[in-house]
Image (cartoon, rainbow, N blue to C red):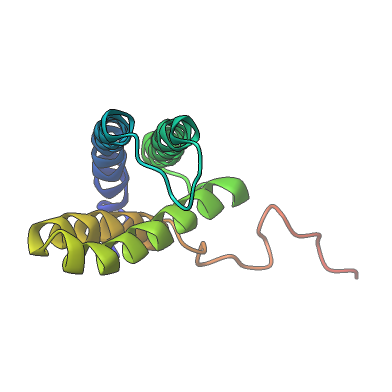
Length: 148
């Protein structure tokens, strides 16, 4: 992949993830409202615990998406690959989007699937674009010189 495309891919990924984060929180807020209004529970659980859990999941998912967006944004601004923790966050984000896409196609339809797979593709493209650095030779700064 051309090094010219790395920065725009990372920046577009960051923008999409930044836009997705409040959407996820809003969806969970609507679900928490339904659970609270109908006093729903699973297997006798306290409905208030269900509402709190729905809010917690929404806020936690939103924070995770913002963290992933920040990793992609920093990678795009610096034009350097993310660190180990950042790559782990992006890989986790890609896995979650893939699993949600597989579930969404049956429950929500093809438009939701298309959106989730598009985000998955952007995250994977960001990871691949900033993959292993090629061209490291014996004179690379991280390696010790050979003994004479």
